[in-house]
Image (cartoon, rainbow, N blue to C red; front, side):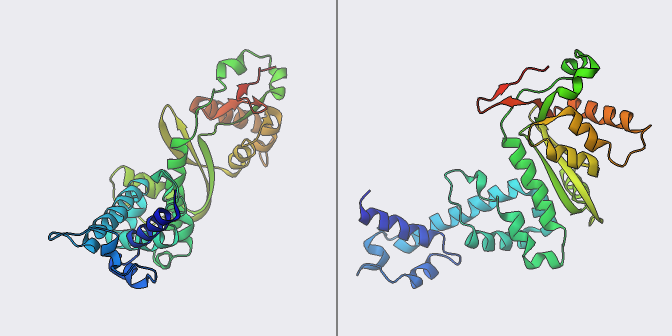
Length: 282
């Protein structure tokens, strides 16, 4: 690509993404040719060069606005149309998309909301956006083979402790200070939402059979599932799940929890090296 074309592309990008429109962007340019924008973009009696470029500027913003509404429907609902529009306007100034796909356009929105003035009125909104972002990323995460209950049941119990496992890629464990699970569920079910309680909690997000689910989990499960982001032995998982439990209750709790994880498709067999090849069970 020659330097002249490259410079033209950079100029058009700056004008199209100017926060307050093409006219403001033109006012900030210091290297336009003698004929101004008209020397680079052909206008006619219907649309001037500036008006033609403004069409693309509108398309750029409103397409991204629609994409982010789709990625953050509950956040958009809670904020309201005007606030969400203004939020995305400010967000795109600071975080202009730099990837070929629009999938990553909103990846920084939860962090952006953590320091946005809207948090003064809606202090839980950043965590709501965090949960929605996690559901989107989990939906797009790769598939993997699952550890089935039948495989575990086929083993002699004394061999279970040696089984190596990990959490599936299509899952996430989130730490939150607000009960945003109920807000997201209310919006998804088209019910009236209420400001959530403030309470430290952990949220599990996972995908099974192309469907993303989420629920609150206790601290032991959160610790065990966080550990299972890496290959871990079953015995170690049991140790974490048993923390703080009376000895007579621990076996039943561990068994119920692990059975639920297997039924939900949360656990995969450990992989060998970088070949993505399931390791045989002992």
